[in-house]
Structure formats: C-alpha cells, structure tokens
Length: 103
Image 1 (cartoon, rainbow, N blue to C red):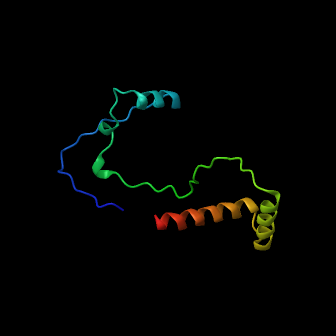
Image 2 (cartoon, rainbow, N blue to C red):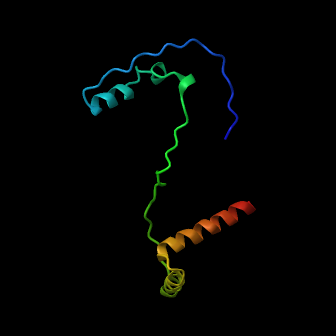
Image 3 (cartoon, rainbow, N blue to C red):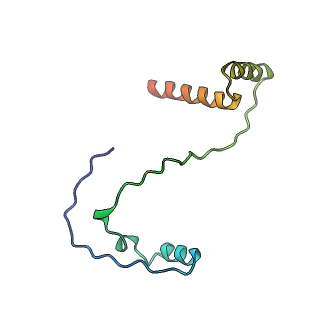
C-alpha cells in the first residue's frame, strides 16, 4: 500500500446530501458537473472500502485449437478432476506470470 501523506488540516464544512425521490434523480444530481462531490463528504473521515466478493470482469473469446491439443487438455483436466476451461485459464495465468517475471 502506498505511503499516505498527511495534508494540512483545513476546517471543512460539508453540505448535507439532499433526499432524492428516485435513483434516477440521485444519478442526475451526482452526474451534474455543477455538483462537486467533495463538498458533501469529509475527507478526514473517509475509510478504505473492501469489496471482497467482487469477481474480475471476464470476456469470452474464440480460440481455434487442433482436435488433438483440445483432447489432450480435456484428458489432463479429467485426471485433475477440473473443468478443462478452468485448467486452460490456470495454465495461461501461470505462463503469463512466468514470462512477466523474466521481463
């Protein structure tokens, strides 16, 4: 985690967050360039948020493999009792990490 620098303390008064009639009204309020979100939150009281249940975004791709290569991957996945696509992701991740360390 990067070292945090203490900024000089200013007396900051925060504006009250208005009550909204709908999510759309709230979204419109926060997206309006005239509203500065920093005026509504006290930076001194902010806390780091941890979203432990988030999963990384994934993208589907098409990959052409020879039948023999795919059969070999499926056989190895069966031996390890894991889905073959999961095994392919593990192998690709391992190889990426391996090559990233060399460069």
